[in-house]
Picture 1 (tube, helix red, strand yellow):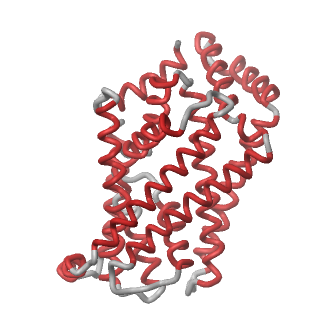
Picture 2 (cartoon, one colour):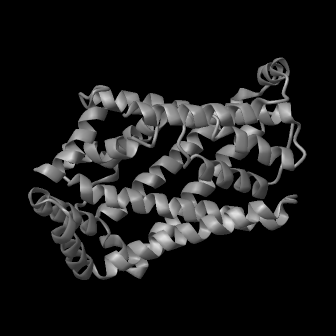
Length: 334
């Protein structure tokens, strides 16, 4: 990971962390944390791993045109990938997930990365759907916020339409890419890049069926509804109550915010928006901060620990993050 990228992520996280905690008495936040009923973490972790299982099911469905792999074999790969997202900045776990799949199942990284990108697009669309559903019921005075949501929606829909076009016309897309390579790329990398493009287009196979698109979207909705249920369980540990729609709005806003560059673990970019949404609903800032910090930890810790376990069970080490990047680059030059 380039040092300047890490530095940018740390600076952005520090800014958001300052936004999250400014004006709060940290002693009061600590006291609120001490009085939480943490038995509610047990069902919250259970429902979260149901969501991870649903993520695995969705990825299996998207990988079927490339290779049929059982959910049992894919689940550790997904967990390792999400662990990588939690401990490295810039969602490096997505590359790690494709790397582990390449090691275990011999699926080209370019092809599997295409499915991962499509996952992120569908996740973004569902998050925006949550925001749109909850927004009319929220006490939001700001028209700027609505404009941001509309702008983000157009960006995600535009990305999805672009990938639909690539999936619908793979030969035309490949021919256009070949023309561009012949015009601008050095001769020695043209064929490797063209091969990567073919693999990437193969990873978009699931978008060529309307039924498959509906299936991917439906599973994505289930994933995020389950994660919102986790938000609800952890809310029971603290002395406040908001509607499920408010938690959907919070879920949508914080996960859209975590697409920004940040330090490992989405420090700050998760917390500041979460606290702000709860304060809009009249939740005391101290309680909102305590709840959001516990929620963040409960989302981060279980899957990170399980991912580390699976990583070492695979005979992998931390150096495999660099190997994943090298293997991905190797597909270009090989």
